[in-house]
Structure formats: C-alpha cells, structure tokens
Image (cartoon, rainbow, N blue to C red; front, side, top):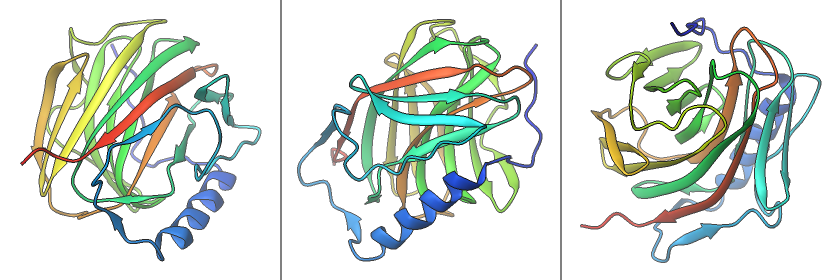
Length: 216
C-alpha cells in the first residue's frame, strides 16, 4: 500500500525564493511559442532555478538534474525559468537511490510555488495527476493508481506530457496513463521534482528534456 502524502505541501524556504526569482524573470519574456524544439541535456545550469538546504539537494551535475531528498516528508524541484502554453514535454527520470515509496515527476503550467499541475509517478509503480492551489491538492482522475507501464525501483522511466488548451495527456514509457481536462492555469513554467514520504534518501536524476510544439 502507498503512503498518502498529507494535503498540505511541505516545501523548504530556499526553493520558494528560487521560484520567486524565476517569476520575476518570466514577467518580461511572455509565453514561449515553441516555434523550434527546446532540448535540455543539462550540461550547464543556464536559466534553471536551483536551491539546496538541509532538507534537499538540487543540482545539475554529470549531465543530469539531480534531486536528493534528505529528510522525510519533503518535496523539492527545479524550474526552467520559462513560460509555456501548449507543448509536448518528454524527459527521462531515473531513480538512483532511496525507498521505492516515493514520488517524482513533472510540474507544468507552474504559476508560482503554490499553483501548478503535477504529473507524478512512484518507485513502486503508481501514477497520479493533481492540481495544487494554495495548500490544497485536487486529484485529477484516480489517486495514486497502479500502472504496469512504470518501471519500478532503480530504473529509468520516460515521462511525457502534452498540454493543448484545457486538455492534458500523460504517458509513461510510451503508454498513455491519464488524460484530463482542466482550465485553471492557462500557461506557466515547467519543473522537475522529487519527494519523500516516511523515509528520506530519495534520489532522482532527470535527463534529455525535450519540449516541442503541439502538432495541430
């Protein structure tokens, strides 16, 4: 059985500061039209917003974005520092270490540290899509549904998200696992995240992020 995360999101302060800085940058650049694909091999920090403290380490190292959760009940992320409306996102996510009772995945249409959509998988094979708004999680579809498409344990999973207006579609390793309609957030940043439940030590590496335009 999965451990259920409490409704209140527990973030540590330095990440919130990083997100505020990202929002200041985004205010001047507008939403990306993605006329050309954007590939991110994580060879350098670039515009990514990264912060670390006693609760988690977030860094770009060895050609990967790595998130290491050091305390139970914590979640940490990095954001790209860009704004997107419609897009197709693909990224490779690998569990390096820690318990399989965890969560990791993609944040999209992130308005600030209290408003976003989260596409989550776990190391023990579960999937969830949720909307987070000012301390409240609203599950979109099934809450932590088991999915055979998820590679469990210390393995790589290819996560994909397509945002097209109010419709969102989600894939794991090429298999569609969810589709929802939600109109609250029209655009926003993208982020990559990891979290721990009752046991710390969760370490996730992200690589080969690709953002492309939605095929009409």
